[in-house]
Length: 318
Length: 102
Image (cartoon, rainbow over all chains, first blue to last red):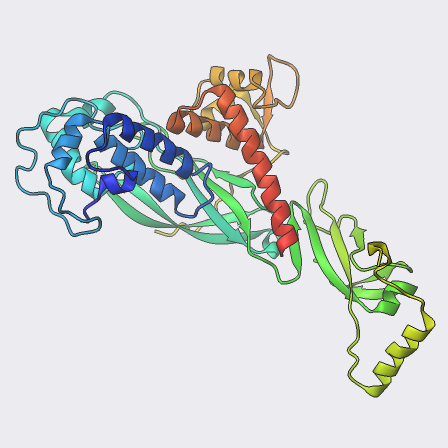
């Protein structure tokens, strides 16, 4: 078991006042709240912070924790010394009911067993009241093709499980989940009762899956709309042409109108992700220049220069 | 443990709709809290009949989020409304940005 430096986690000195600890907690809680923060480890940090605050906000727990001494380093292998908490009287409220399962083994070894055995606080808190299991959230990465056609994806979850003796352990769980056709990035799928089991007949929590798309080599996804960069030759853009274009439904002939310039967007209605209404495919024209790597190609460019009185920078006033 | 059978969930989009009762059961909150969220302008019911209100699937994520903000950060309803609006805006800006950057 690793030692946890609660002072370091909260970013306060060991002699911080209770007010300073409260302020530090409020600030960090806002920063690392998983709904607010986009950092990938926000959830872990937020839970760790809650655990640190649970100890440091309570002068009795804090005094007991301090008694372990200042020589411990975070991450160091830790075993609580025998009778480490002798002489400390804990009152109720050992656990905050909702989050207790999320606390670390370290916390459990210091405060959990003690509370359960000595005062029955843990039991009392849950006794006689149905408790709904916690909801779980996970992200699932899919390919654009999955949204176009629908798919079944296997996902692996690391979920804390509570066994019949009340011990918490992490268990790996594999689920096969149907990804419905037409799903958009950022949408959620709710799987009822696939979260943590409830206590004393309370219903299980739910599992929420947030859909995220892997980057696609051709298309960028914006809701149900797709964006594609399509290179065209200067003469195709200038004179108009029918050019081959990939779409999710297969290659089509796209009419490029005469007089198109680079950056022009053409909309192909209903050729994005299916749905009601289906998304559109936006084709962004990029004018590609042939390389001037032969005498003939160079001559062709020179001929253009002679034929056109063309100043592409006229709009800049130069 | 592998569940052989594929699970079909409920896609929470604007097409699926939930009654007030379903929404409060799913989120584990009292219906009163949801009504307060409607009054605060955080949630928009799909129809105007106050006796038989239905909500879009998107509301579910919004209520859950609001609950977490209230529980974890002690934000009141007005604060929740402000935070949710700003989060929506940031999400839109982020997706715009990722389109421009790619």
